[in-house]
Structures are given as C-alpha cells and as structure tokens.
Image (cartoon, rainbow, N blue to C red; front, top):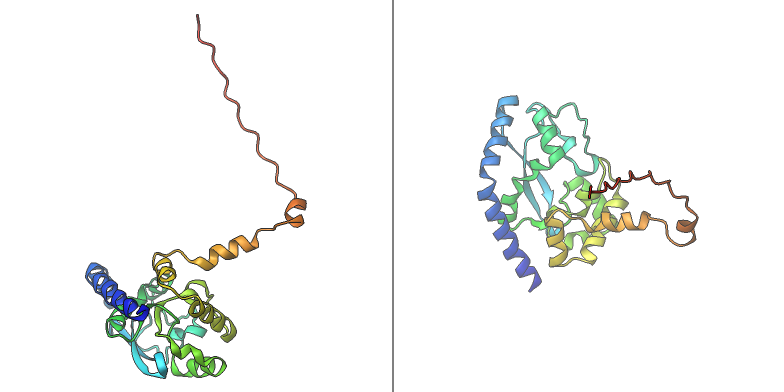
Length: 219
C-alpha cells in the first residue's frame, strides 16, 4: 500500500513540477546553448531497482568535447573540474542539473526520495558490499546527496542509504522534499556537550546591555 501511495505521489509531484518549472527549464536550456552549444540534456546509464539499467537525464554541465565525463560520477565528482562550463558549475552547485530526472520519475524509473542511482562501475563496487541497495527505487535526491562532500567513500554511501531505507516513511520523505533534513539537526544536537562537560565549559562573557534612561515627565 505504501509503495502504491509513494508512486502516485511521485507522479503527481513530478507532473506539477514539470508544468510549474517550465520557464526555468527554458531559461537553463537557453543559457547552456548560449555558452557552449551542443546538446542541452545529457544521458547516462545508471543502475536502478533490481539491478535493471536505465538512462538517467541531466542538464549538460560540461563542454561537448569533454569525453568520458567522470565529473558526473557520484563518488568522484569534482567541483573544480576544468571541463565544467560556468553555467554547469552553477547548475551543479544548486542541483538544478538534476531537474530532467522528473521525466525519469514519471517513467517509473526513479522516485523523489531514495538512494542515488550509480553508474554500473560504481554500482558493482557498492552492491558487492551491500546487495540490499537494489531493493529500493533510486531517488532524485536523498540524505547522501544532501549530506555528502565532493568525494564520498563506499562505507559512507552505504551508511546513508541503509539508514534511510531502515527508517523510510512518507513523513520522512515529506521532510526531505520540503528541504529540511532530519540528520543535520540530529547531528547539531549531538555536537552540543552535555553533562559534566557542558557544566565545565566556560561561557563567553555577555556584552553589557545599554540601559535606557528613563525621562521624568515634567509635572
């Protein structure tokens, strides 16, 4: 039942987003064409649920003659890749290069929230350590994408994905979609000292507050 509700929600949200964001798509496509020419959308083979392969869609962020495009590989993404265009760097920084994947969601190949789909070479490494990753539909975004740095190792990727799949719920997905990540808040609370450590921690002196002088009203 939950998977059916999730699928209906995915299709509804993706359809609305495609209509609402159409002007933004047009602006991005125009910027890509004006800067470097070539195609607007880049496709790449990724591994989805059950190990099935599909073609993921992204806005092109590199020059057409880049070749190989290792900068689009999730585990080895380079933010300073010299092949990136100026528009491409902006798209990557804001994750707007992922917008075409709304089409993948409508096709049922992806979902809104879930483990990010990997290229076959990366997926072979990760699935060897944890085959359970193929039990879920890959997502447009997820905790790994929100939390990861430019370089992420396999253990960190598995920890993020396993943690999400273990506690997955529609409420948690709604929280992720709204842009409020659960993990960073928990991490910030965990970083605060408690108990004796908190008591012994010296407090910074407060700046003196300016006292307002009361004026006596003339009788």
